Amino acid sequence: MKMFMLKFFCILAIMFISVLAGMQLANDGIHKMKGYDDPNFQNAVAINDNGERVKATFLGNEISSHDIDEKKKKLEEISAFNLFSSMGKKISEGVSTASEKLISLITE
Image 1 (cartoon, rainbow, N blue to C red):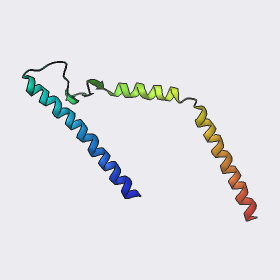
Image 2 (image 1 turned 45 degrees about the vertical axis):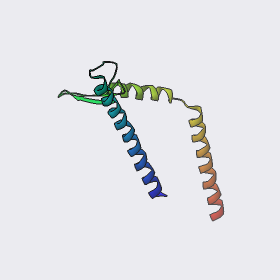
Image 3 (image 1 turned 90 degrees about the vertical axis):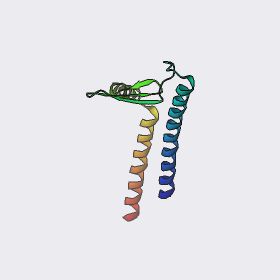
Image 4 (image 1 turned 120 degrees about the vertical axis):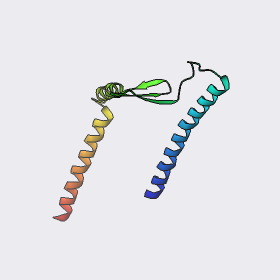
């Protein structure tokens, strides 16, 4: 089962990288076919290094660590109280204590 999962995730990663490379090659082909640069056509993935900071863009959207921090804060605010999560924790605690009591009764 472990080998299957390993192969599955390796193939999944290869396919994802292939899709990104294909998008980039298609974009370059469009630029070559037109003969000039059109600002409407953007690179699928671009990484710019200006010495101090590294800027990454994915499908024209800039990705920065500030965006990731903001998304993390939003996620923490959203999951501050999750009804199903709290119910699941209580159920798991109840099952754990019940199984401990049952085991202690059986062993005595």
